[in-house]
Image (tube, rainbow, N blue to C red; front, side, top):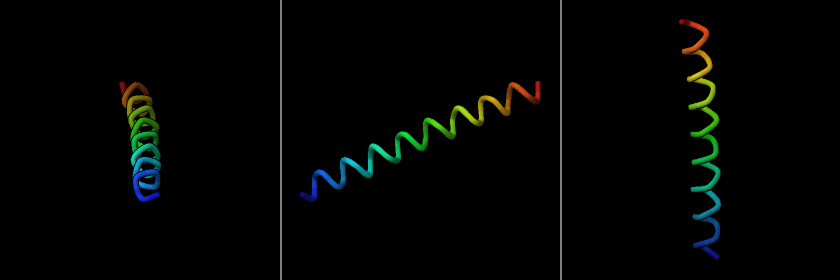
Length: 32
């Protein structure tokens, strides 16, 4: 049970990080 919840948290965190990276890259392109 604990392992599943930890894996889920890690998955959510990685997904959020990917979204943030995409937004940051888009903003960088807009600035150029």
